[in-house]
Structures are given as C-alpha cells and as structure tokens.
Image 1 (cartoon, rainbow, N blue to C red):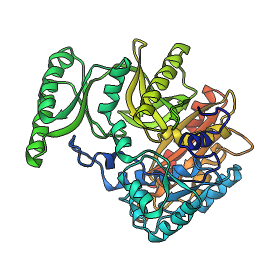
Image 2: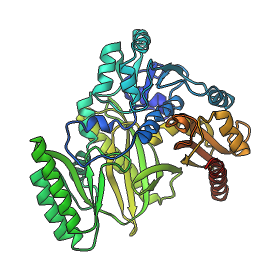
Image 3: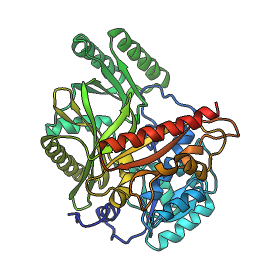
Image 4: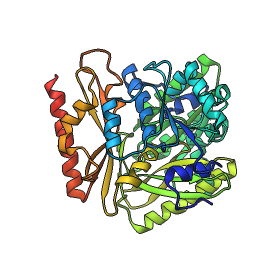
Length: 459
C-alpha cells in the first residue's frame, strides 16, 4: 500500500515500483489520445496549427511536477526570467533537457525521437537507473525507451490505450454498478446505425440531447452534441461513408444522453503495482462547452458526495490494478441538477491537468486557503518575455512572502504560436491562491482585466 506521508511525486514513484529517490524523466506528451486514436475510426477532427502549437508547449507543465533529482524533457528551454521567478519562490527545479529540434506541430515525444543528442543524454541517465514518466504511455514513448534504454515507469502502451477508451469507461462503470448517463458503446458502423435508432426513439424523442463521442477524444474534440433525429442520421451516413471508403467497418464511439449537470468534478488517485489505491483529491472542474479550462479546490461538495467519490475511486482503482495498470488516474464526474453523482464520465489513466498542480498545491496552498487553476486566453503582439508578463501582473503575481496571487505554472504557451512580430493567440496558465471566495474572485477579475487591457493595446 502507498504511504500517505510521501509527497505526491514520491508516491507515484513508489506506486510505479521505484524507490522515492529514483530519478524520473518527465515528458509532457499532452493529447497522447491522438496517438491512441490512430487506426481507430471516429468523428472528423478539427483544429489548426496555432492550437496544436500551444497544446504541444503544455509540455512545460512537467517542469513543476518533477523534483530536484529528476529531469524534464522540453521542446525549448524555459524563459530565463521565468526560471528566476520560480527560483525566487524557493522551488527546487529538475534538470532541464531540450530536444534537438522543435517543430511547433509536433509533440515533445515526436521531437525527442528526432533528437540524437538528447537520446544520448537520456541513455546516460538510464545507466543511473532513471525511468521515463510520460503524460501518457503510447507507442512513441515505448520507442523512446527502446532507443535510450530508459525503463518505462508506466505499463505497456497497449494496456494503457485500452483502459483509456471511453468504451472501457462505460463498460467498467456498468460492471461495478456505478451510476452513469444512459448510453451505448459502438464498435462498428452497423452497430452505430442501430444505436442511433435507439437514441432517437428514447433520448431524442423525450426532448433530451445526446453526445456522440470518439473513444479517444480529448478536451472537447471528437464530440458532437445532437438534439434531433435528422442530425443523428447525418452522422450515421457520414460514418458509413467513411467505413465504405476505408474498407474498415470498425469504429470506436460512445453515444450518451446529455445529463443536466450542476457541478463538474475531477477526482484523482494513484494505483500501485501491489494493487493498492491512494486517493489523492477531488476538485471542481471548470469547463466551457466541454473544453477544460481549470480547477477549483477544495471542491464545494457535500460529505455524502465526497464519500461516494472516494468509494468509486477505490473500486475503479482496484479494477485497473487487476488489469495490470499502475500509475496516476483522473476520472471526470458530474453532480446532476437533481443532486445525483455520476462518478464515471470517463477514466483518464494518465496524468491529468490536475496532476501538474500537485507539487505547487503541497507547497503553496496553505490550510484554509482556496485555489483555482486557471487559463487566460491572451493575444500578445510578438514574443512576450516573462519580464513583460511580470510587469503586467505586478502585485497580482504570487510571491514567496505574500502567499496570495497568481503563480504562473506555464509560460511557454504564451509564445508557442508566435510566428513573427504580429499578434498571435496564446495562453497564460496559473494557480490563483487566496484566503477566501471574495479575494479569489477579485484576484481573477483583476488579472483578466489587466490581460485584456494589454490585448486591446495591440489590436
């Protein structure tokens, strides 16, 4: 069983069968679902180069999850001003390894596979017993381990892919008797046509919407919300045409009735190689049209719901352990408008956004404080160094002395989509820490206002 006295990261190391001091190499291969989805037929994907460039620089989150004896692989070295800021907060940072190439359209894992010098350094670390801890395990990370002799901290990619499917999530919830929205799993075009008819006759006929979801969709991608039979039949024809063109009748979709939610939740636990399950936390998830925007914690839920969440975590964790899985797990859940907990919307058997907050949470969120992990959409004109971000935020930025304000936990995403001196889309990620609700809301409003003013100056 995992020891509660360990820090979060030490607990993960123990769960993965390593001693707490074992060096880990962290790799923030966000949206690993895209790799798992290869060969799986689903819904058309959308997105542009700008969005991909920003998502791929979310790799910098790993910098603040790793410990002083660890290493992190990044697509480029963090801004020196940002590193100075983190140092001023008293954080012991890991060793920073940078890929030989940085293609904005590629994940850090793809760039690492094209980086001989980086691979040589990783091989040297492997000789010292280092293990690779990626955001999620796929064939790409297995290939990197094979090239560098790094030991993977997580289970084989095929297992990890299987337990991350939304089809698996629904079937596991059914097996465990956990409440979930009415829904169906589809693994062929013919099955999807049958499910579409069933959904039209039940959910749609009753005036309720349904969501059609890719089994490996992430953060609002690979999902279509349907509110009438005509639109559902359009999707059926589209899927059938795709199956006919490809000659592959198999697909991976779930269809679920859209629940009337009151609260989004994300709860997190760590599964150990010995079968133990450590419940880590539950947070309120902040979403916008299905897209993750942040977390608020502690979660404002009843003792009853908290107990139900912990019970679900233990049961799901035990089942994952029986499958051979170990490592961090996050589960999305909701509380419906009538107060019912639906504890399994989907199982994310990988790092979650909330995973990357843990080290900062342990260090800076004091007893009785409130925190919100937040992203701010911004539009800088040209490259914006951290020094400029610091000037904009001023006294709203968290300092070691104050203990309240915004703690920036990813600055690479500010400039990821920059291609020249003109305006570009960016994101500033941070952890807002305050003493009470009023202060938290005022801080959020003030930060959003200052960033918006800066955007307006350049339009």
